[in-house]
Amino acid sequence: MAFDFTNLETNNLNPNFVDWLVDEQWVDMQTHFGRFWDYYQNPMYSTIGLSAADAKLNESARTYVQAQEMGLPARITGIKRSEASGLLGGRAVAEIERKEVVIENDIGWRINAMVDFLFGKGVDIVCRAEDKSRRAEIDKILKQVFNSNGGVRFFQDMAVLGAVYGFVDCIVRPGQKIADFVQNFSSSSSFSLQKALELISDCGLELIEAQRALPVLEERDFRKISFYVQHFIEQKNETANEGNFLRRLLGGKGSSTARHSIAVTEIISPSWWQRYEEKQLAEEGPNIMGIIPVVHIQNIAQPLYYEGISDVEPLIPLQDELNTRLSDRASRITFQAFKMYLAKGIEGIENRAVSPGRMWCTDNPDASIEQFGGDSTTPSEDAHISEIREALDKASGVTPVVAGVLKDKVGNLTSAVALKMTLMGMLAKTERKNYAYGQGIKEIAAMVMHLLDVTNIYPNSKDKRVFDVIFPSPLPENTLEKLNEAKLKQELGVSKEQVLRELGYETNS
Image (cartoon, rainbow, N blue to C red; front, side, top):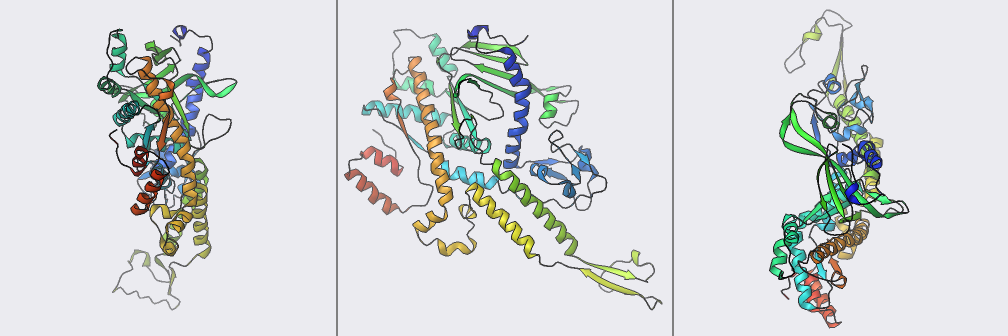
């Protein structure tokens, strides 16, 4: 059975187009976005069962490969890889021995530092409704829904996915409790804050990674989503007796027994949703929200594209160059760091060990033992590696100072202003992201309140769905200076509640 969109009550979604999205576009996205994640996480894989890697095992090789090895040339790895073969495939090059492979993941810690600056201290979401009591109730509702979905961890996961892939989508799912409430709702039902808090705790905020997202955008306006399609592989708690193409695509070893998995396609329209398993309709139902419950957040704005700019993508070529030079240096050090000897005219020398207390004798007057090897300085190599690291700093905006590596720069950090100047690139990028992610969080909050309104759990109007998102400063601050600043703000007319929130204190009003 193919896709059947009769219940969606629209002619704007073509089943053949969705087939193309799932069968072709999705596969291409696994390769494209999968590489971004591999370079961020740099996972480790055993070489057991990998014929090309096993063929290159020698005294200089390790029993594992890492994802970033994909970017190393064959003269180092001894394996010729391509986009089609991936990291776990490839062809062993017979005439080239595997060198020592050195991987230093300079991307991972930079992305983590960005996330720490953005959401390391969490955020505070403040309702701007005029009614003070109403404002306090909405704040409690939002706090409940975000805490039920992980709290600070939810925001950090959002930032990681956005930084790696360039964008992140969030689906607001009503949950079973709200669905049951809507089904049993009667006009005599009473409304209470406690009831709303109980029901909204079951509301799900699902972050969608880029590899799964297949949005159908309006043809004349790429900023609007007509239908939201996501496709992914779902792991079941049972085993399958034979492998399949999708499992091999995701890195399976092709064994006869493996965990059972199915391909799931979900389609959401403003009025209806459907779930297909292996392209067979499994579930469907009305969309009680009446809108497509998806919030799209670009990591860094990219004009005329649905996808934003990834923090990982521009660093990949520099990371490959760094790993290549570090591997070259490791091979040179291995070759030169140990002294070697060339013996001439001594019979049986190949069977004798070099160790203290050993003597060699021969009747050959032309015999000799020559020593060579030993490490030597290579200023150009060190300078090149240093310049690559500086290029990574410039491209990412994240310097080693962010991670606490000061070296000889301690003298530059004698004041708060000097520290801000040193971290200017990082702070500027963080400010830019504050707006992008802050706007996304506001939209999620507004969508949650819309859900409570259309389900009559907590009726509210659009003017109650206006929010501020407060990001604490990522830099260490002087408490006394912050308190003095708070006093001045209060004298200028800023509300006491707002001032306390900016200081990080809970308000009970």
